[in-house]
Length: 158
Image 1: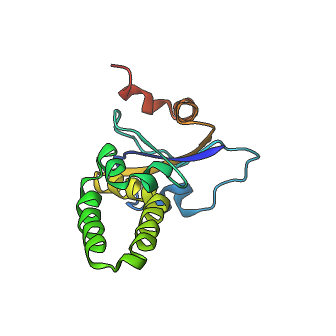
Image 2: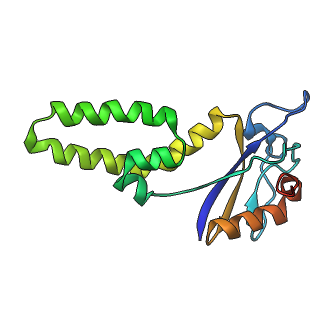
């Protein structure tokens, strides 16, 4: 089982709190349940349909292997603009003996934080983290999410 964070535009009413932590049961702890495949606000706020992003948790092999291409593929423009100068300058300024080790560390660091960069970009684009889904793959996660939160499916029926 993998974990996926779900990001979608969230429209808050004026009487609702603005922080996601305050939305959960009005700040009270959630009731204990045996198995909850999808977690999210108990009193769900209306979600604007159409833009739902599932971001997996964990290490990204492709981001560690080919960082610039992975950043381009996932449209992480700001992260790419920050990564490329650091990558080039380290390659030019480091002595040959340690350059390979530092580049390996930089690639591994990006592999471990690649999904965090995607979540950061989603927050910058106005997508709030609305749920966490446990599923074997992305398709199963989307099905489980839509079964639990059917109001999100309206954006896909076009």
